[in-house]
Length: 313
Length: 274
Image 1 (tube, rainbow over the protein chains, first blue to last red):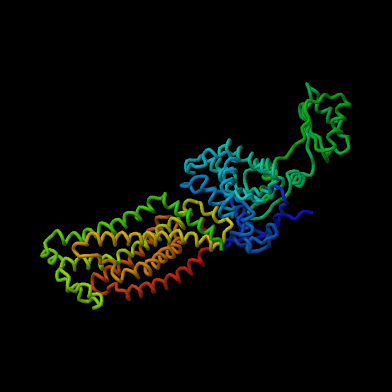
Image 2: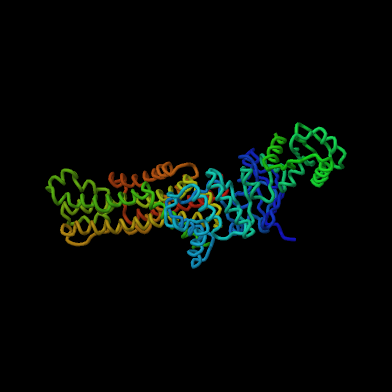
């Protein structure tokens, strides 16, 4: 069994009376893309800061690569890369100078630094602008440069805090593709702090949904949907004027069907599990009822998120 | 302690300052005025206007020198009125003005480095770098102190060349620097550069913008102006002993301020101010 890269138990951080992080517990496995989802003020950025040892916790325990970030922050930060929520650069310096600076701080040997900088600039398609001042870059280019900065020392763990915030759709898509590519190609472990649910659904293996410093739910999309909605709904559209009412009568007796609603040419059927759906389709076929479309309802992360936040409210 | 990281931070800060006109402009203009324009005015003036007018302007120069310690006064023996004027102005009166430079340079660079970094929102990425708090602190302090001392010394050098060249025929040879300038350069100037940066670090935790920090730390110049007026009024003369004592006092204040600055410069408190 592999050792988790991050282990957090009852972690707390208060600022005066405000509990920014309120007793959260989670683990992140190697190669996983783990999402911290929540509205502004949910505690996502504070959690990233705690895990990198730039803020001490008020309570609880945390281990990153088996190290305590509160006391071994430097060693932890050598193995992490962070894309901050405001990915500001030294605008009066060139992209190359920015990366050489952070590469030096990350202790990349002098003789390897130049080639490493060129390699990463090329990976992020910035090599032709390497010697231009960053102030001349577009927002999307600055975001790619910020990702390059976070990855310059090839850290095994990457924290991305709102990586597509403020980007236009094309630039956001480009950044998401890069993140997805990192995860696919090099099994990069990523902690993604975001309130962008579509990004999270696309990129994350598991998510923790936070609100007011607490974790409301945690798991994969499927697990979370199953927790919230233990039954499955399937919508069936019949073909060419077939009667939904008579079709409904025919499938009420199928084992595992819990509820059937008929309206015009459509049936909404609640079943106990996914494997009931083929039996429903067979029953309709036996009755010679023509089927146009079978659509098991998928829950999006957005459905789950808002259901949880509404429950919390 | 990782000195490669420390120097990288210092170099980066200096590169940034070079691009900030508000930060480097005083570093050119002030030395130009102090090292070239002012000495030329005070040396050429008594050579182009009648001695009587100089005397009238100065009043009785003996009155000005009345409170000067005898050892310092010896340099004026057997000198003409024009020579006395040049020694008095270039050797004594302008001396404390030079102490403004290390203070000013270090507080300007320090303001840009400590507050400017926060203002430009680049501090957070720096805090995530695998450096210790002390390495970050030292890198930023060196970026402010070393150029402050270097530029001050360069200004002293230019001043010495200008003073000696302009007054060579009048004085009949090289006469500058006076003995008191040596401890001023090598003891008091570094102490003031450190005073400028340590005060700026403390000020930076209370202000939000580079200009606020610059203006507040600039108020330290009042200390130097006190020395200027002390000399003009004859209350205080910057002899070797006086400079050594003032330097020692400033270093003692530096030690306290540096201690406070280091205690104040923690990632956890810096991140809270982002």
